[in-house]
Length: 315
Image 1 (cartoon, helix red, strand yellow):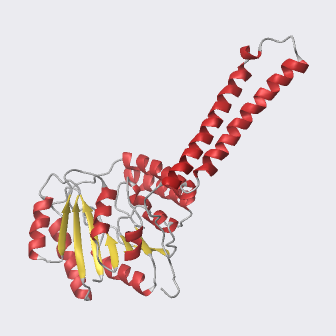
Image 2 (spheres, rainbow, N blue to C red):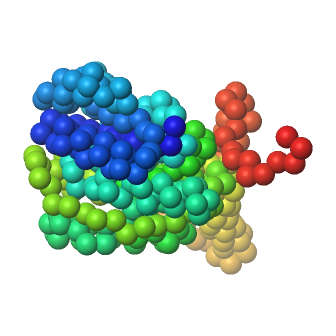
Image 3 (cartoon, helix red, strand yellow):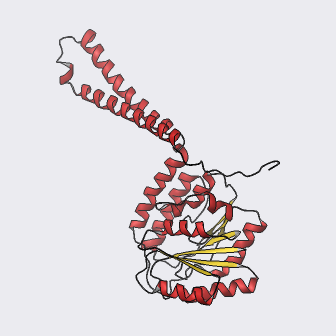
């Protein structure tokens, strides 16, 4: 099979049939074999009934239904687990992503031997204050933290080589950072393509400002796990050294001052420097303990390590 199209959705009953017909027309015109996976993330409208009807008319259509809303990352994870195509393409169900982009995305993966191609909605039809400006700030921060020079991390239209989606694990709200997760496990051939962004035709957006707040929090998680996930002591130990050093410095100063410089001064325990020293040394010790616990947890993990082998001789 050439392509698996994975489409997570929530309450998109008005757009599903039009989206299906558009994708089917594109695939037929380009002679591509495909499967279309709709992941119903707990819709409360008639989305599932429409998906069921489409699957009966078109044997290339498959549906997965969640009992309640779990989020886009979990929906993508379920779709990735089921996908069987050589190239996996993700897109949103609101018709703002154009299926006409699919053949070129597929060709970029196959002909350019890329691992991942991320869409870039260079011209957007969203509100500037509620979506465009926060998105620009979010993408700027994501570029600085991740080191990837993508313009639009949150674009739903992406293409992956099958190995990529079978190796990475999407959880929480990490769907925004799939390129970062892919690069972290060794998929370095990541590119970007300008794609058409269309105005929403049906319904209204499911996302508000809280999406960007959560996005920045997830960005901190990605930064920590990609840089220190395999060596937590390097992070916590460094903080522990700093805190313990500050505390030890204050303690040494108090001891020298009381013994040699000003013996008649008030008791050490009555001075604010004593509490600074005590607090920072305790915090330093706790950081060390956190680092040791992190290392112990890593050593005792029973699950297999996820990594990507790019080449192998005499397999």
